[in-house]
Length: 329
Image 1 (cartoon, rainbow, N blue to C red):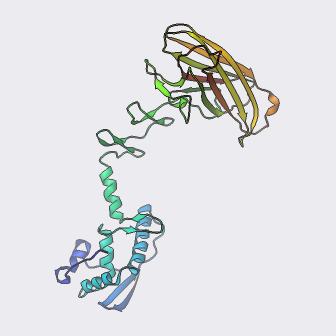
Image 2 (cartoon, rainbow, N blue to C red):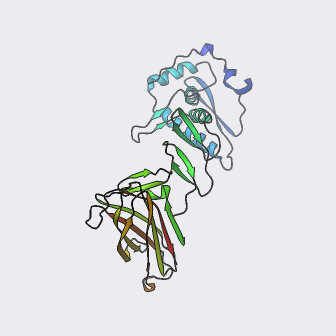
Image 3 (cartoon, rainbow, N blue to C red):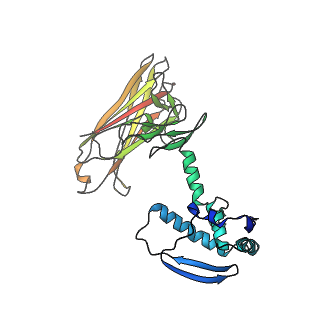
């Protein structure tokens, strides 16, 4: 519990009012007796509407008033002693202490802490050192805190190779687009393949193991009308060895509530010649028209698999999936 020590004789009541003026009253004024003497309470005229800051100050006043009612009696008695001979109320000293950043309230029931509005203003001005443009983001850099201005419309927040946030323009992968591209950040997700890596030319890629089955999932909105779906998976290798890899896809079409209404799957052998090379694993298939209902929304998932370790996958080296294209016609 905070303890205040203040001698009333050292207080100049004029210093408590801005510009050294006595208070002016607008509205109904009620006078009543307190232990410290005569006091006045002002009921101001109602003010139409409130700004956000006015609302915050009003809420602060309300909660501070509630806190005053449960303040320790010993501290309250100190406030009464300090208010003797002054025109201000003991509660006014308590309120001034709150507004002056002296106290904060800890709510044991919710676990939240409530700070004076001045604290918020102080922290806001302190953070302006790093970023002041609307929409800016505060992040921790290797040398301290820094600000990142808001990106352009359509950009997404990504993590650079240095582990720092950056805005980047990524080809869209959501919504009803006729040609969807999954590359760079759009490749990644929970448990995608057996990890990710950077190729020598800077491309980001998912690792498809040569010793075990690896799976990568992609999906988005399914555009209508669509009769055919084409897919293309761009795969690279860094090993100088050659050999066949066994690849497969599983396509699933979902209704609005996530129920599978149709599917397609196929497996293919993708040969890799010796030396560094890139290969394309691709195909297409038709979609029946009678499975769609007018006005409904649909989505799809495309699962790309490498059957590493399978007898038909004789290439023991890892391959790297760096781009997936899906087209709808």
